[in-house]
Image 1 (cartoon, rainbow over the protein chains, first blue to last red):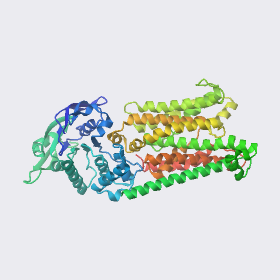
Image 2: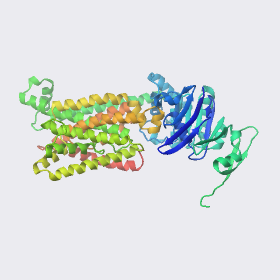
Image 3: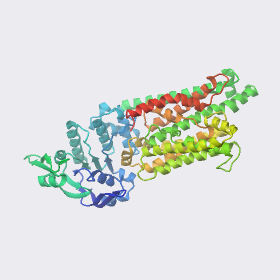
Image 4: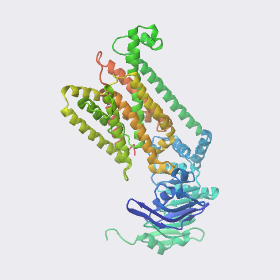
Length: 260
Length: 344
C-alpha cells in the first residue's frame, strides 16, 4: 500500500497554490515530512489529498484513485489533522475523541468507548478526559486532536504541524509515538513540519516544497545540506553529522535582512 | 475513564428528565392560571374527565387555556431548537431566528397583510397574515442560505448578512408603518409584540408538525452537527460534507422558526438564551444538547406565559415584551463573555 500523487494542481479562487506536483510516494511504516518555507503549499497539499481542497491530477492510495472518492469515502481510509485545533466547543475531551470515532464507524457503544479509552491512554490524556476543550492549553488541545486522529485508525495519517504548540518533552514524546505507530501498524504518516531537526530525527523521507512546487526529496542526509538550505530557505546554516544519528541543522543567519 | 464518562452521561440524562418534569409542572400551572379563578382541582378534573365539570369550565380549559399553554411549549421548543442549531451551524453564539432577521421578515409579511391587505399566498382571513409571515420568514432563511453558497463567504460573514437582512426588513416594515392607518398600525404593533392568545388546536397541530418533521432530521445528524463545532476543516477531515449539512439543517431551522413566528408573532431571546442555558447544563454533544435546548425553550416560554397572566392581575401582557425583558440580562452577559473569546 503506497500513497502516490501525479500531476497535482490546486487553485484557490484565481490564485494557483500547487503546480504539477508529481513524485510523492509515501510508504507504509514510514514517516514522510513535507518541509519548506511559509507559503510553500504544504498544508494545501495535505488538504488536497484529504479531499478538503479541490485539486486536479491523481492521488492513488493502494492502487485506488482517491480523487474519485467522496469526502466521506476518503475519510474511512485517511485522516487529516489541521494545524488549527483550537475549538472552544463545550465538549469534554472524552466526548471529543468519541465524536471522532463515531463520525467514522458505526459500531457498538462498548467497542467505541474502549477505542477512545485506548487512544487517550496512549497519549497520556487520562487525567484530562473530563476536562472541557475550552479549558485546555494549546498543547493539550493539540494532543487531544492527535488522539482524535489515531482513534479513527486511518491507513494514511496526515498531520499539519502536529507539534507547533507542544513543549520539548511532548514534541519528542508525540513524534516518537507516531513513529512507533507507523512501524507497528504499517500506517503511512505524512507530516508538514517546520522544525528541521525534528524532521531529520523522525522522518524517513523529506519532500521539499517551495512556492507550490516540488524542489527536491530524499533522506534527511541527502536533503539537509548547507547548499540546499540556502536554496530553499535563503539561510546560512551549519549542518552537523553525528556518527550515530541524523544530521543536525544549526541556522546561522538569514541571507536577506529586514529593512536592509 | 469509561466509568466516569458513563456517570457523566447518566447525570446529563437526569438533568434532561428534571427539565422535562419542570416543563410538565409549568404546563399544568399555565393551564390552571388565567382570568376566571377556577380551583386547581377543578381544572385538573376538566383535563382528565371533561364530562364531570361544567360546560363553561370544559370550554375554558379545552378550547382556550390548553391550546395557549401547549402553544407556549411547542413554540418555545421550536425557537430554542432553531436557535441551538443556527448557533451550531453558523458557529456563532448570537445566531437565532431573531438576530438573523427571520422574525423581522415575518413582521414585514404580517404588515403586508394588515396594512395593505396583500397576501403572498392565495388565502384569506386570519390565514392571510399567518401565510405572509411564514412565506417571508422562509424567504429570509433562504436568503441566508443562498448567501452561504457564495464562494468566500465564511460563517462569520453569514451572521453579518443575517443582521443586514434584519435591517432590510425592518426598513421595509418602517415604510409600511409610516403609511398605515392608526387602526392597522395598532394591530401591527400588537402582532409584533408576540402573543399566544390566538392559539387554536389547528395552529398547535401545525406547529407540532414542524417539530415532528425536523427533530428526527436533527437527531439523525447529531454526530455530524456536534463535529461542526470543531470547525469546518476538522469536520471535513472527519468526512462530513459541511456545505450540504449546513444547507439541509438551515432549511429545517427555517421551517421551525417560520412556523413559530407566523403563529405567535415576534418572540425574541428564547431562541438565543434557551440553547445557552442548555449548553451550560449538559454541554454541546447534540445527543443531549438538542433535547435539553428544546425543553429549556419550552419551559422558558411556558413560565413567561404564566407570568404574562399573573404579573399584573387582570391584564394579559404581550409575551414578546416579557421574553425580551427577561432575556436582555442574559444577552448582555453573552456579549461580555464573547468579548473574552469564550466562543470561536
